[in-house]
Amino acid sequence: MTPMKQLILPLVLVATSSIAGLPDAHAAKVTLDLTGWKDVALVGAINRFDQDGNLRRPVDPKAKIDAPYVDARATNAGRGQWIFGNLPPGKYDFVILTSGRQRVEGWHYAPVLEFDPFFPADAKVEDAKVREQVVDHIKKSRHYENKVVPLALGGDKKVVRILMMLIRDQKTSYKAGYGTMRHEIWQYTYKYGGWAKEKRTRVLDRLLLPVEELRRWTWLWDPKLGGVEISSQPVTIKCDPPKPSGEEKRPGLFPY
Image (cartoon, rainbow, N blue to C red):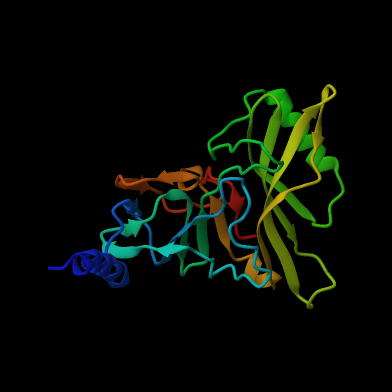
């Protein structure tokens, strides 16, 4: 074989491998154990933020509550096991959707300001007085939405971030009978001896849908499904099905 042919052959093999879609050597098998769930319609993975905390994909103003955007979809392997066979490395939030108007989703606290760190979804605010001050400020502030609910708080001594649910199901300037819903990450920063809300927020989603439909949904947020670091090693995550509002510990929206 001539030197030129020896050079061309490896290049052809590399190109052929890419075209054939062979498994990525650095990708991982990720299994969501959904034992006990009923009528699962979708299990998806969302690579939501880049390394600086910016959304990789702009928020879709036409998003549907029953059709979330995902970067990868799992396959139903039976017996409650949903498998991503080849998920590339990254930090993912997972989402589970059922045909019974149930949605369970993961999150993590992305930076709101530049150069701030990420916080995992299970981060806590250990000081009860700080939690009370932040929640009380939110409650007493004026908002466009008539339901402004802090679902979870996490942070440290200098920063508190909040997963917020904001709903307006009263009359709006939009279509008659429609309401708005969105989730955001808010931040309170300790400044000059007190906690102050930052004007900037991280919007996770924005929905416009009939109020009657909105009130029929269960949409929970589960820290086990959020900010999951995927490398090349297999990962298994067990997630419990939603319970009635009086029994469910995960925060979110319940039918009302």
